[in-house]
Image (cartoon, rainbow, N blue to C red):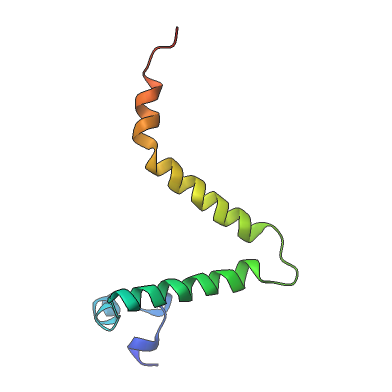
Length: 84
C-alpha cells in the first residue's frame, strides 16, 4: 500500500525519512497516535477472553522501570552514604 498507510514495523530503513515526513506531529496528531497505541495495546493484552495477568504485569513492569530510571541519580548517591 501507500507509504503513509503503513505501520512503522512495515517500513524499510531506506523509506523511514519519507515515512516520517508523512506523519502528523501536531499536538492533536500526537495525541491521536497515543490513543491509537493505547487502544491497540489494551485490545491485544488486556481486553481478551482468556487473558491472564500478562497485560497488567507488563504495564506494571514498565512503570517500575520508568520509576527506577527517574530515581537512578538519587539511588546512586544514596549507595555511597555511610550508615552508622
